[in-house]
Amino acid sequence: MAYVTRIVIIGGGPGGYEAALVAADLGAEVTVVDRDGLGGAAVLTDCVPSKTLIATAEVMTSFDSSYEELGIKVAADAPTSGARVVGVDLGKVNRRVKRLAVAQSHDITQSVTRAGVTLLRGFGRLAPGGQAVDGSRGVVVDLAEGGVGAEGGEGGGTRELRADVVLIATGTRPRELPDAVPDGERILNWTQVYDLDELPEELIVVGSGVTGAEFAGAYQALGSRVTLVSSRDRVLPGEDPDAATVLEDVFRRRGMNVMSRSRAESVQRVGDKVEVTLSDGRVITGSHCLMAVGSIPNTGGMGLEEAGVRLTEGGQVKVDRVSRTSAPGVYAAGDVTGVFMLASVAAMQGRIAMYHALGDAVQPLNLKTVASNVFTDPEIATVGYSAADVECGKMDAVCVKLPLRGNPRAKMQGIRDGFVKLFCRPGTGIVVGGVVVAPRASELIHPISLAVDNNLTVEQVASAFTVYPSVSGSIAEAARQLHIRKRAAGGAAAGA
Image 1 (cartoon, rainbow, N blue to C red):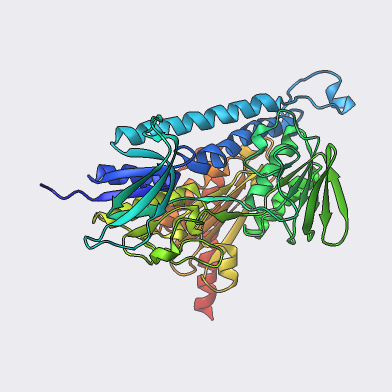
Image 2: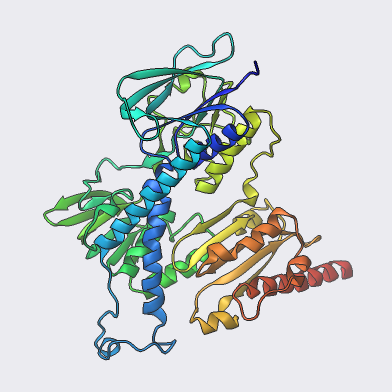
């Protein structure tokens, strides 16, 4: 009888369910243990819901910012009275958000069960005692009510599984400050905003990273008066500085109150208002407060360290480039590793883990080919080496930044903010990175991702046909300008 590898995956997010599909396809016996529903936070409370909300906000922003320029005629008194032309029913928006999230989770569940994967609903943890003589590990599952099988059934109690390979893919949860605990009504984390039936009149967003910036921009577009509290010098401190500057300028121009170098010390509810006290003693009042101050990994109570799995000081699981932890037979994927907190990276880590564990061909994770996007308006998409990498000497590269205001399609669409930025090696001209700031930048970054992933030169990018007129034409134009700059730099060096 052929030996079948037993795999237990704890966590059903992108890292978990993608790993399950790969492992099942490779002939393993796979069990997924999950508490909340397949898709995890990415589908149920984070990525899918937030981007669905933002899709509505994008329509609002596009209309509000360009209808007059594009010659669209609306209610006669709106342009002169200052009244808003369109509004939003937040309750209806949030019902759609939840409906799409549940539908996506259901679709994933069907795909996984069709592949022959067993689903258990509950909390999984490594059993004490380490590996058995045969190299397997015990996984203890505290079953939830209705926790057997994909659609429920018998539940409660505990079940112990034996696994040759265990994958930890338990994700993260919103970080809470001791003096700013969400109540789900006026003080909210990003998983709770979809329970609102009415648009916040005055929303204070604490935290100016990706999550804070996305929600601040979205709610401003939906009609809230927004104050963004940032402890740093600028919004999006981890992104390209030029891109962050464009976005902050857009936020301010649209009426957002961006408070830089302002740290929130506490948030308290006072009747139907909230008060945010800053470290310098100032107090900001609003109708609601959204806390976007990071996340913490779901590693507590899982017996990881007892099993030899090393964690960082922040509690993330340490992994190598093929998703192995320090404990034999235990892998980890997704946000719980803190490697690069994107659903696409989680999925890739999970797939790589299974390829490696089951002896299939595997290519280690290469973070310099990861494309990421901030879903603000305009969007900010990046791939490869960054301006910070060039400035610190990590990568020797030449850069060109081409504003979109000269692009003919951008002019036609009323796009005034944004740019394309490319980085290439000074000698070979190989494209090593890029930034796009534009509406739908998430779609425009793909040709640059292909160039970075396949070591294409700026000459190759510049010689490929683009549609005229198109916003993507600016990518080819930036490549042409970068070729000229590289050639000029090479000529100057030769002359010296």
